[in-house]
Image (cartoon, rainbow, N blue to C red):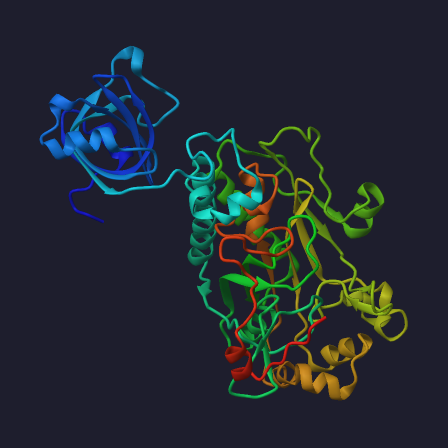
Length: 468
């Protein structure tokens, strides 16, 4: 950052001083002898008064007449208090203005395809995503990005203080079915072999527990090649944490404390309906609400009420829609409840898991479980899921082998950052809190992705594309 630069918000405390600001022209109002315009930077907006006679050079006077919205400018001027009738309490800088003394245009802008200074006239989503770098200039979108940052900052600081260490896990990994379809990445060096992008860091964080890390945390990117519906995204972000030597109760209490602290810090206007968070079993939730992510608010029209609720005693298995056989309700590394382990031999579909989800205002925002750390039990689960011994060894042999080297009991949780941020921001879908999201059908209109690969690139990756 330039040493002489003053941010817009900092001018409030600099009345009578000469400062230099940089930013984008947000709006311009030509009053004849005077030109009023707002300059916008990362901290907010500042009103500037342009008087030709006050400017130091002909170049500055020419620039005053030339500037248009979204031009990037450098301004030096005198910070002065606004008159009582001109104060704008809706803006953090509404008590001051800048009397321009020098003005320089740093770059010009074409007329944007939609208005930046009018939040009420939003363009269609396709156009907004095509010009996302302009859409993010909207005040609402800039606030959403800052809110998301503050949510992650609060969560990270909470876990750091509690002794967690942040560990990055691989993005290129091995295909091991965990419930969703995976994105495949061909290997150029190993012909006919593929990496996949991780659905979650599940196996790596468990292996970190085997490694003795004990308290792991990560803001993790996850990828799932699912049919798009609602506001799902092919890539999303989890706030992911895992611990050794803990119970379900330990993890749930820790999660509650982190969420309560976060809300108090980043959205103090919000009211948490009940602390501690209420708890309901999966069976009770399905019977009472017809779903496993209940909205327990009494007034569902109040966006400032946050109704967190734990859903416990989740099923260990469910019947797969496509396979017509048992599949993992959570993932195959979930520990069954002690009192239900005998069911694995006879009626595994009735077994409950040591798993828990946290819902907020009718949306699932996170979930976790105590994990399996016993080789024989893990092997049994894989067999129930229809895996042969050969398939188990090929897909999960590394996990089973790790469980032979003193694995600790462990468990964890993951919070969906996108959904959590959307609810806190009162946004209708997660695309509004993601910097560069995909459309509902998994396209990026700005970059033009996905796109065809050149023949040379396909040949190097040993791929042939079949035409449908």
